[in-house]
Amino acid sequence: MANKQEIRNITLEELVNSVKELASKGYRLVQMSCTNLGENMQLNYSFDKDYEFINLRLEIPSDTQVQSISDIYWSAVMYENEIHDLFGMKFEGMAMDFKGNLYRTSVKMPFGSC
Amino acid sequence: MSRRTIIPFGPQHPVLPEPIHLDLVMEDEKVVEAIPSIGFVHRGLEKLVEKKDFIEYIYVAERICGICSFMHGMGYSQAIEQIMNIEVPERALFLRTIWAEFSRIHSHLLWLGLLADAFGFESLFMQSWRVREKVLDIMEETTGGRVIFGSCKIGGVRKDIDTVTLKRIEKILVDLEKEIREIGNVFLNEYTVKSRLVGVGVLSREDAYNLGAVGPMMRASGIAQDMRKLGYGAYPQLDFEPITRTNGDSYDRCAVRIEELFQSIDLIRQAIGKIPEGPVDTKVTGNPDGEAFVRLEQPRGEVVYYVKASGTKFLDRLRVRTPTFANIPALLKMLKGCDYADVPILILTIDPCISCTER
Image 1 (spheres, rainbow over the protein chains, first blue to last red):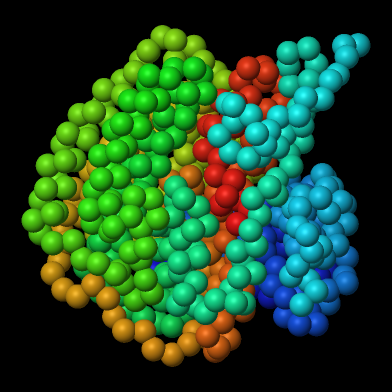
Image 2 (cartoon, rainbow over the protein chains, first blue to last red; image 1 turned 135 degrees about the vertical axis):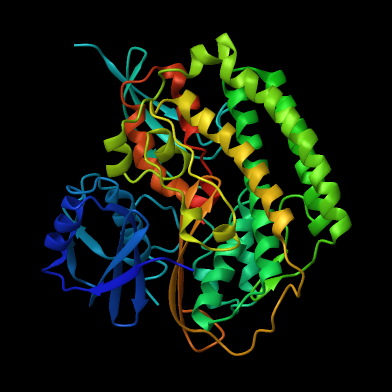
């Protein structure tokens, strides 16, 4: 049912270069999401161009600082703030930093603690 | 150097349709910057997958939003069906498509009414919602609910629509089209409406693409992408093209949505003409194991569902990226440099649905 979908596993160091490469080819940022895998966190960065879907996947320990991609794609600001508020992942260099106040939850980082 | 003031806008305001809070930094009557603050309706629905098993969760998924509720249920079912390799019968795919397009019609009519209310044209608001009542009556007759249908399930749909009802729906569509044409005419050709919409909130094509705008926002700026072309449901057998405009201002977004109304009526007619006989659901056994990404075209734009399961009846992760979440950066860009009186109209042109955004 879905057209071309590709999931690429990358490492933390390759993240910014892969994103820059996709941006230069004209891909748009679709979404960023995070899954809690116990000790590690899995980040998914999804891109789309002409209905072709590419997903960059990273698996990192939960206290790593990830480089923000908001200087390449400004809209990443919303997703990075959300992941920080819900999961506790720290992003370095966000263009607009809400410092944990984007979502008002009574339990801070509800997904990260479990 | 002129003085800057900060005016808080929302979450409760007579002209604001959704509970979003914006801090508007103003210089005289012009907005210089807008700082958003969401989180008033966060219900933690993504965390609820740990408590409700995957078959029950469809009821929660439908209630993520009241206006686009059917498509949330459909997207969730499609993701689980893709993981479990379930083959949904043809008739169920067509029924889902018919309900999805009715969902789109009622959502766009609701939006047209709210837009008229935002610039003060109350009688047009009432007329749009009166036309919408016809659609809601069809929904209630075929599914039992006006807003939250409860008719989509994993493996198909819950109820069938018989041929007599389908023929009657076709007749109602003729009246519906005539009434929408009258209302659409006022929105597109009336001088007072045009003076509030033309040239307001221009989003260029590059900005729309780079900021990740989706749905009618993207199509009104000239990018021809419609996720229905991906081929889910019964869409591969229906004939349509994405509707685009080039100027990217509020008038174009209004025009794209009105034309999509006519396109949806045409799609429903095609689907009623081609619907095959057969069962409407298949039996589902076992638990899902795997992951899937599903993309749908909701009335507001592209929605992405990511489901991850690992063999138990509770899912590991459900992630819904709703179209309004992707349109917020575009909204912030459009608000820079606009007039204070245009702020409610600009917020409305992205078609906000904050309950979807915050889940």
